Length: 478
Image 1: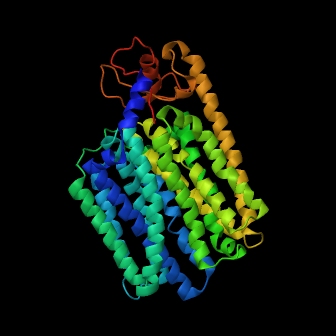
Image 2: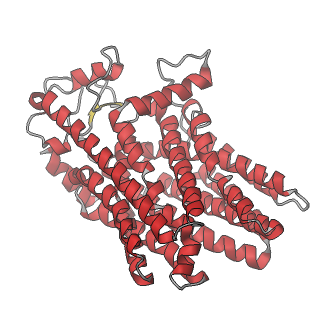
Image 3: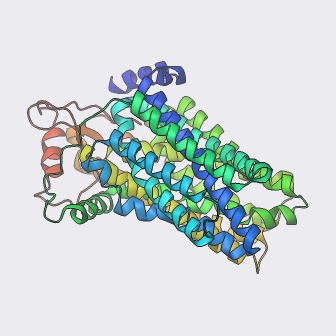
C-alpha cells in the first residue's frame, strides 16, 4: 500500500509543480547565478594569468585555486550553516564574494593577490552551498525533493556550460576586468533574490553532544564522524565522489581534441557531450524510473559510467568518442539517488556540515584527478589516460556497490520480522519519529555495529516495530 501510494505520488509530481514553489524558484535562481559567477571568475583569471605569464602551469595552479577551497571550506566553514540561520549565511556569503570579486577587478591588482582573492571567493562558496542544500529539504519534501534535485543537477551542468562559454566570450571581447565586474553582479543579484524570496528560518537546534567550549572544532569533528560512521552516509557520499573519475576527460580535453583531429570547436563539443548526457540521464531517471528502483540501479550505473570510458583504450574517432562521453554522462544520473539518500539519512541539525564534507570531497577529488590526468597526458595519449581513469573508477564502483548490497542483506536479516513484506532492496531508510510522535528527524540506517548508547540506535529499535507509536513506518523513497 505504501509502495503504491508513493508511486502514485511520484506520478503526480511534475517539474511545473516544483517550480510552483516560490522558495524553490528563489533557491534555484540563486544557485544558477552563483555557479555562472564562479565560472566567470575561473575563466577570467585563468586567461589573465596565462596572458601575462604564458605559463600553462601557473594557469593550472590558478584553476586549482578555484577548486580546492571548496574542499577546505566544506570541512572548516560548513558548520556555519548548522549554527546560524541558513538564509542569513547565504546572503552574507554572496555579499562577501561580491566585494572580493570587485576588489579583484581593481586596476593594478597584482596577479598573486588576485589568485589569493579567488581562493577566498571560492572558500566563501562552501557555506553558501551547504546552507542552500540544507534548506532544500525544508522547502521540498518526498518526491518533490527528488524532482527538485534533478532540476538542480541539470542546472549545475547548464550553468557550468553557460558560465564557461559566456566567461570566455566576455573575457575575449571586453577584457577580464569586465568579466569580473559581471561576476560580482551575479553574486549581488543572488543575495537580493535570497533576501527577498526565501523565508527566514531560525538556526537549527544544536546537536546534543556538541560542546560549546570546543565549539567549531567539535562541530567539524562531529559532522565528519557522523558521515564516516554511518554506512548510508559514507557509501552514498563515496558514490558521489566517483564523479572525479568519469570527469577525467575534462582534464585532457585540449590534447584529446588535437588527437581526434579537431580544433577549438572540438574542445567545446567534447565538453558538451558529457554534460548533455548527464542532463538527459538525470531528467529521464527522475521521470521514468520509479522511486523504489532508483537505489537498486545506483551501483550498476556508477560502474557503467566509469567502465564505458575504457573504450578510449582503442582510440575511437571523434564521433564514437562523443558517443562514449554521452553514455558516461547518461549513467551519471545515479547521483540523483545517491544525493537523495544522503539527504534522507542526515539529521537536520548537522545537514550543513555533512553536505559541506560531501561537496568539498567532490571538488577536491575532481581537482586532483584532473591535474593528474593532465600531467599523465604529457607522456601518454589522452585516450589512454581516460581509459585508466575509467578502470580505477569502475573498480571503486564495484567495491561500493558490494558494500551497499551487503548492508541491505544485513538489514533484511536483522529486521525481517519487523519490516514485514517490504522488498529487501527497498529496505534502505525508514524515517523514525522521536518519542511522542514528533516530526521525524532521525533515520534508521544500515549500522549493525552502532553503539548501544547511540540515540539513533534507540530510535531505530523503537521505530522499526509495527507496534511502535508515533512512528510512520513508510519507506523512505527517493
